[in-house]
Structure formats: structure tokens, C-alpha cells
Image 1 (cartoon, rainbow, N blue to C red):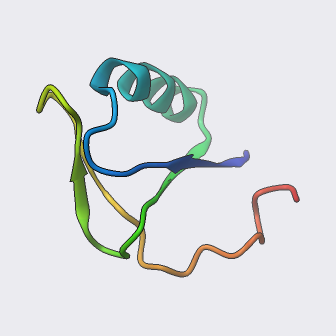
Image 2: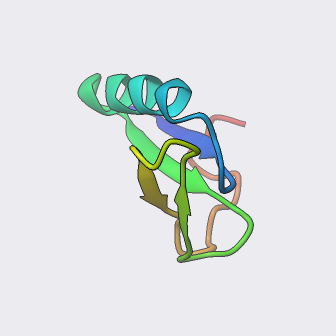
Length: 65
């Protein structure tokens, strides 16, 4: 399966992130959150979704680039 990157920062639109993220995972792909600071949680505008950034080691490998 593929590795899919989601680029996020605080105050993202919850509904625009939740559905694609869950669908990617449901399809068996690896969903990777990439933010400004590794290991930091980011929260949506509505406070309905919260994700933690990866560990900072997210080179191009595995993303099909």
C-alpha cells in the first residue's frame, strides 16, 4: 500500500481533514501527518479533530516521488 502525507497546521478545517484521512486509512494506506514541529499536536478550528505530527523523519522515501 501507499504512504499518504497530510500537511497540517493548527486551525485546519476539521471536516476537510477527517473524511479524507479516515478514507485513506480505511483503504489500507499509511496516513502520515506532517506539520511544522515534529511530535506536536495540531487541532482543528472546531476542536473536533486533533492529530499528532510525525517524528520529523519524513523524507521522500515511500511517498512515490
